[in-house]
Image (tube, rainbow, N blue to C red; front, side):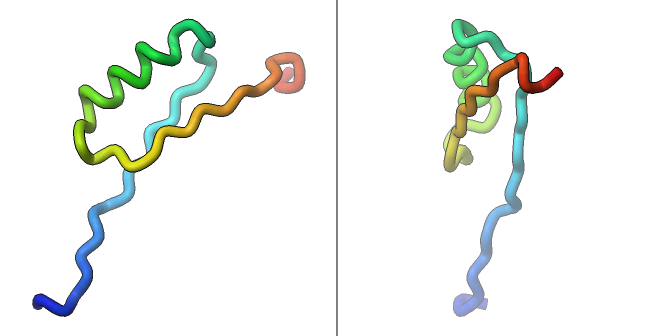
Length: 52
């Protein structure tokens, strides 16, 4: 029906343990994979010593 809002399915693609110098390559691969469907790309820096 025209009055109903249709939202696309939300897809989350998480990648972990990526070195800083490879982030641009990973973002490029995500853009090539998902195309115009990308709404947001979030990059978080975590201290590896805290994860052990």
